[in-house]
Length: 120
Image (tube, rainbow, N blue to C red; front, top):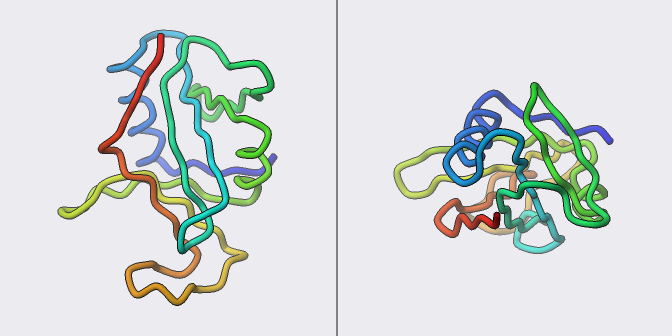
């Protein structure tokens, strides 16, 4: 699987793990097809991967990815954007053309962090 995590996304994921879990926990990222830019996502902080999840490590950060997420994230760059009006993970897909939505950037989907959840 080929997924890139930018330093800002890695910092955000580390922060979520530290505040919602702790040492040894991982970031479970569930990505589904949908939305104007092609991806919608939810995430939780988990002590261990769920059955069927794969563990992808990047610079010591553990991502727990269900099968559908792995398929959709292949070739994607995960970034974190912190803007005045919204903050969240951003998925940049170089294979996608721009969509017709006026609020979307070409090949970019976002996940708002307002609904951050965690399970222990």
